[in-house]
Image 1 (cartoon, rainbow, N blue to C red):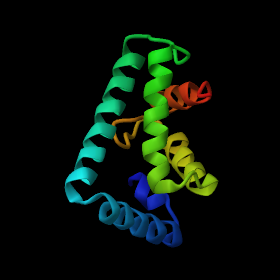
Image 2: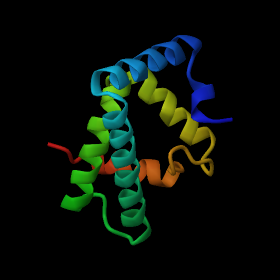
Image 3: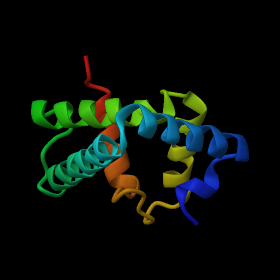
Amino acid sequence: MGVWDYFTPEQQERLSKRIEQVKNELGLEEFKKLRSESNEVVSKLIKGFEQGVPPENEEIIALAKRLDESQAMFNERDPEMEGTIERFHVENPDEKDHGMDLKIYRYIEKAKSYIR
């Protein structure tokens, strides 16, 4: 079971519509570029975590901010959606969503807490 299964049908519909809206606004190539860049940011955050770089490190915070901005394009910082993602990670600590398990998710959330 993935994080998508944790969203309510209403959240799934809203997120699907938002994905299509962003894709239409940006165009397919820019949308693909955004997704690729987002995956690259996540990879860099995972590498930072694995190397023991503290979440308060300026570079990690900057990466977390970029990821946050990218995620906000889709979830619009909806606290219910963000809570659903957190619940998925807490209930499935070893499952990965976009390369993130619970430890990495918490590391990134900690880094986000330092965003000014």
